[in-house]
Image 1: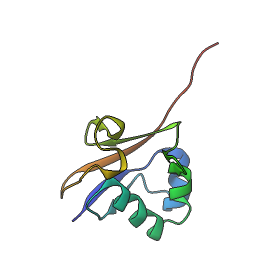
Image 2 (image 1 turned 90 degrees about the vertical axis):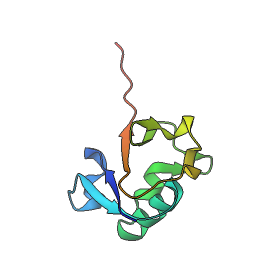
Image 3 (image 1 turned 90 degrees about the horizontal axis):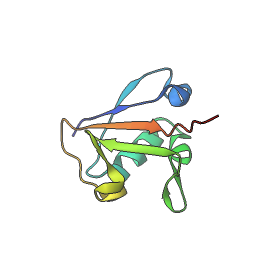
Image 4 (image 1 turned 180 degrees about the horizontal axis):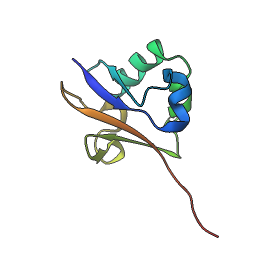
Length: 91
């Protein structure tokens, strides 16, 4: 099952500069584990002991996984996963 994962610029050093990579798995958690196997260090940038890091957003297609089943969100062939660092702003 091929899932396209969009990689934000700050994490592309771990994916040899690629902005999109392929991963496989049945859930978002599986996808992250597959990414870790192919791109070591990625998991620790995305997850902490509580789940998805506070300043990281992960979308399945256009839906934030926090409003779905979080890391247990099921994925299917053709889905896309987007990793989006949260941006804080202000003065």
